[in-house]
Amino acid sequence: MKRGKKYKEAAKQVDRTVTYEPAEAVALAKKTAVAKFDETIEVHIRTGCDGRHAEQQIRGAVVLPNGTGKTVKVLVFAKGDKVNEAEAAGADYVGGDELIPRIQNDGWLDFDVVVATPDMMGVVGRLGKVLGPKGLMPNPKAGTVTMDVTKAINDIKAGKIEYRLDKSNIIHAPIGKASFEEEKLQENFNTLMEAIVKARPSALKGQFLRSITVSSTMGPGVKVSVAKF
Image (cartoon, rainbow, N blue to C red; front, side, top):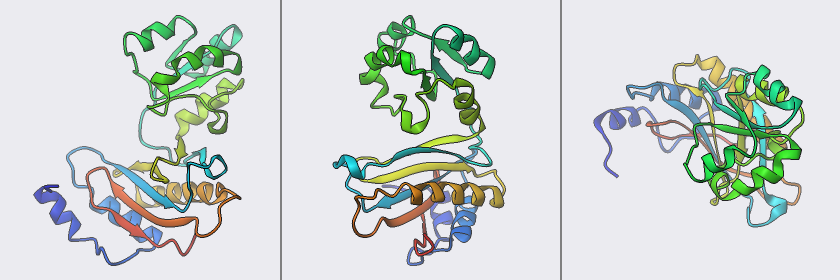
């Protein structure tokens, strides 16, 4: 892969042979974000899990204390009083059956998170093939299938993120923007890591966290020491 001049300059600041302490790694990821836009700082956690086994799957959500720096659009599937509740809580879109053809046939996906009340999951289930591959399917573990739509919307708008294993048994999660102060990124990183450590599957034998890397969207990866976790 051909790398640009800015990337090469930024990469010189990172010693690939070193695993850094978390605070140092986060600071380096922020420092090496040199793109013209406000890059996202991301954490990539390689686990010892085997996601093919249901008991070793990891999926959950955590509210980052300093948010993600991203404006999140929320779609809520609800009916009755819950429609008004969702609108009052600040949902960007609220609806039911009428949204199915819009998403299925027109390819409308102008939202980042989908919340549904349990009685609407029959409707939402019909969108599994569209929402599933994009990681948008509501899920009780992530708190997006709930009767308490106000709390769900407030948490998401405040900086709630979902984490899950991908096909390579790696968890990818954002912890904020490069424009954030170091302390805020560090707090978000610590909150995420606490949640991941707690989510260790009891069925897993051997090492849980194989490696942790922090990077900005366009920047080089910075290895983090797993010893602390």
